[in-house]
Image (cartoon, rainbow, N blue to C red; front, side):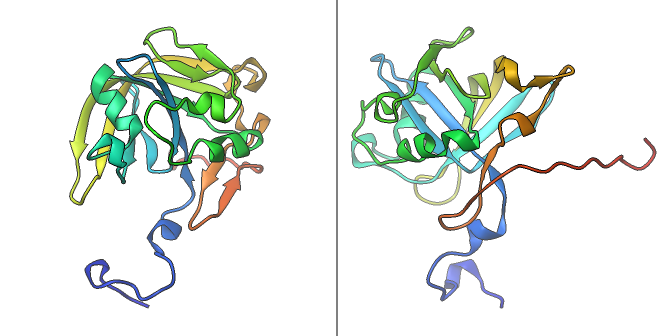
Length: 201
């Protein structure tokens, strides 16, 4: 099968997000200028640089009460900070609960019954029990082609690692089974690891 996206695919559901998989989930917490906390998952997310450490996520839809975007991007515009909370398999239902389209100002931490902790380097809440949290300061928001498509880039200014995930000086993902997004309504968890040496190492 071959199709040109501008002509449509003719399938019951868009296959694009099932092709680029698995995708890590950035569980983004933000705080608005009015002090309201927000928490939402984004599967267009990744790390993009080591030095200084930087991450990105993309928001691809809008809400009537936020104009051209959703709560996360709107609040980052206001304050210039956000936190990436890493999602483990055990938190899948809480993560899913925070994906609901709720009115601006709704605290998804409360909706999902999640304990908050205050970030150390930025004025923002984080998911206290998450395996890791990346505190970020906004570097730029890039408007992408298409309605409501925004890419948010941030520099990591603080990193929290849960103690039980540290083994022999390494952050061990098998201790918490990272959750990733596949296509459609499908997800996967990391349970098996293997190592490869690069040529010349």
